[in-house]
Image (tube, rainbow, N blue to C red):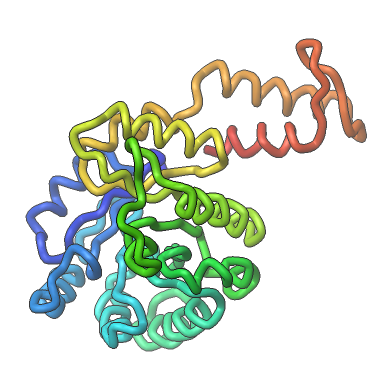
Length: 284
């Protein structure tokens, strides 16, 4: 992604698609799930299929499908695969049992519609139910389609019967755990960790704070529900020139001393974890 953000666009609001393309978001998520009322699902599915025929060259386009339990998942996949989205955002992903069937369905649909095999990726929303929290470790190695893992607090709160998931603007402990487990699961699977949306619409400082924490802890991008959230996300999750210079110097220092496992830089000891971090920063 050219920018560390993924912006949701309601699938039944095609007029917002063109605006989203000009928003500066790194990627777009055309939504068939939560933002679309039941009576508009079929209309949204058709609209998203049309939107995919005009994908911007500068943005990856994802589609959030409905979960398997809705009975709409296969219809969603069949409607969007011909349009060749970058990937599918899979909600209510409860471990291998949820991820593997979708990967196999994509295998079949790609063949049926002449789409390059394995080209459509999956971003799993993997913490939306209490049960899913116990299956995050199963996602590693299931499919090469798995591009990233993200977490969610809203559906999880409803599932466990919580009165609220935030206090003083910050998620409470059950959801901090979900956030942390998402990071660990992504690291174990060798895929991208994506931070969940902020519910703050007219509070750029709150969005910026969340995004800064996300970058600090290992997330590579953050989802957004409104274009106004993009600027603070980009500001917070873009490495500074000084940080990039540090990363370049770390890589150069190890390149100058091949075979060395640790060395000193600016009076501090650095080793292989620092080198891995530096390389990751330079890829961002």
